[in-house]
Amino acid sequence: MKLMKWDKSLSTGIDSIDKQHMKLIDMLNEFYESIRSKSTKEITANLIKNMREYALFHFSYEENLLRKHGYLALEHHKSEHKKFISKVEDFENRFNSGKIVLSIEITNFLKSWLKDHIQGTDMKYSGFLISKGAN
Ligand SMILES: [Fe+2]
Ligand SMILES: [Fe+2]
Image (cartoon, rainbow, N blue to C red):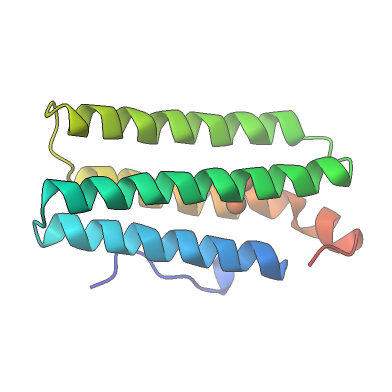
């Protein structure tokens, strides 16, 4: 069973961004599946690392697009991205040093963050970027 599914309520109306969000959700589902099926520490560590790296790529894509078009709330948006990356790094460090077991609570946190961020913070730039012709 998937932890999270993409649906229209997550659509920003900008194709490139929606595709990246879908990929992030896929990666989160894979990570969740690896925890649920108790796969090896190496596999799980690799999946969360890949997800963090893809999130970094996506965040900088989004920030560059917003910067290019002069989006006013960029700094606030960036700070949310930064907090998320720190949080994931913290999970990774504690997991890799054996201090925590990655759990469903953690995947649930990631899911809620993604959903709230896309539907709240990302959705706020939707009309703005569409009006600038972004796709
Ligand atoms: Fe996003
Ligand atoms: Fe964002």
